[in-house]
Image 1 (tube, rainbow, N blue to C red):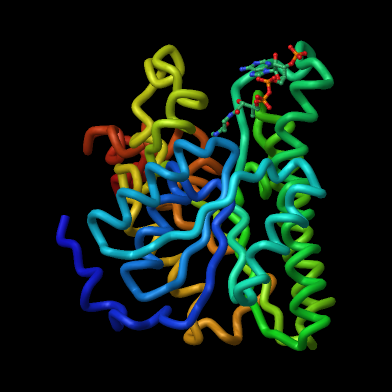
Image 2: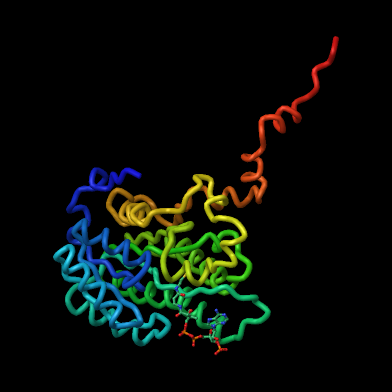
Length: 291
Ligand code: COA
């Protein structure tokens, strides 16, 4: 596929923007962060594992020549979140918070322990809320305009069996950005969401697409465009939504999934119908009367 990224955005589009990506050391958060620094942003990443953060910072230094600020922080712990924000603000305010940190796994809901339920909900719902509330308070107190972007999932809109804690938490996070769009809009704070479809990552793919699940049908069959997403496609949307070009968008969650969730509403029939031979379609036409 042709990569047209360089023609889409000015190389200094995000210069002057200080951005925190939670869980920014791996996966989609890392890909989005890379795009942000390529476009001049001042990037801060946080996560639970120091070595992962340092490895990503080193990679960005070696390949892009940029310095990335890192903070070890489990977003489930409100006190640690506050200390991290204190440390960040000590050298200047953030302009963008990207709530990306997540946890998820496949499990039958009736077999989940309450600790397992809490582990996911605490990261996805509470962690996003702790970061958003802390950043929002600082922005409002200082009269600083900013943007909160939330990574969501289709399950926030439709629910999803076997990932119920994540679906519940993401639905709550969607409610958060819609609510705060109105509550914080008068302060010049925007809240936006992104709903990525299938973008392969090591973490999510190994947890959510185990071989026995993939074995049932290739994921591409469930996507209208018949392919999975490429990380740069998601990253470019995430650039747009935090840029000045999107200054009038708030409270909105943008789906980027190749038409997967819309095809889902048609069940398996959309894919199956596309395999029908002409004769099947012909047989469905009304019979011509002989007169
Ligand atoms: N099925 C059922 N229960 C599971 C599970 C699974 N696949 N994975 C973890 N759990 C349970 C554990 O058994 C434990 O419950 P218990 O004490 O009753 O046994 C509880 O969840 C907490 O697990 P633990 O490993 O101690 O928690 P953690 O905070 O270290 O891990 C998770 C958090 C569960 C989200 C873990 O999957 C993780 O760290 N994931 C990395 C991030 C991620 O998921 N990324 C992909 C996003 S799509």
